[in-house]
Image 1 (tube, rainbow, N blue to C red):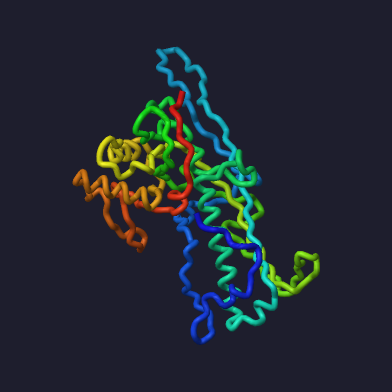
Image 2 (image 1 turned 90 degrees about the vertical axis):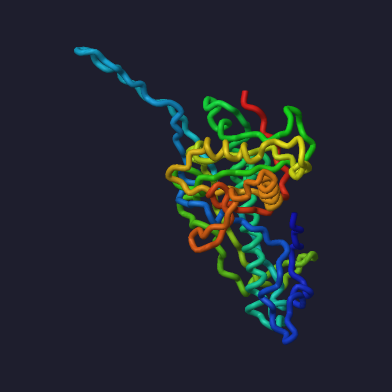
Length: 342
């Protein structure tokens, strides 16, 4: 994964990225940037329960009667359960000595680039949390997409587990780093993001304080520039039938030629199970996982299942007609294995 920088900016930060004429190069290649297309695709709305969002999931329909003449109809009601998702609060604080800003050849560009680094870091962190967030290990985060499908199952009575299919080669456990492919149905009835009431949607960059004071290691003050970045967000999967997961892909054997699961068959089964009505569907996977899918399709002479299409003015890769998004974090996080639903 990307290496985190130190807390304070230093003089080499000014020198790095300067052009020959002394101006700052705003096109410096940033090797720490991770794509976060899940956030670009995500429908976002205000929470309906303060800092969280409540959803009512129907688990059973009302009974239907076939009465005879002069017979009445017994009242009935459906079964449902309520789920409440909590939002997380993420921040990033930019702090740099005013003297560094003062001696920078291009002050505005220097300040902008440092701010953009924090914006990208926030986007990366929020995108990773949207997939892998877990309040059990970090109660200040929010539960991500992977936690909605922690088990796999074969029958519809398994509820959410029916929309998770395991790609493990055997019934035993694996020591390999595990990967997943997610099929998300974006929309008010599928997966969506939310922000607490009284806050704003998306990343909020507060105004930079150009006359702040900071403290050194000896508790002595020096003039500084401080800017706080904030982001409130939660994730809700209102209807688990609108999304799905192919889990337990063993990364050490993805490109083997023998003894492998029928990945393409499993993906077709997942696509068939997931209800795409009324939502905007997208596949999410790591770049290496997409490489594996394309390799398997070529071996099966089904390469036409992958195509390049114009979607909303952008050329994107599609699988079975559904756009494919790649996220670097999905090549870096070693997932927990999903277990069979009991």
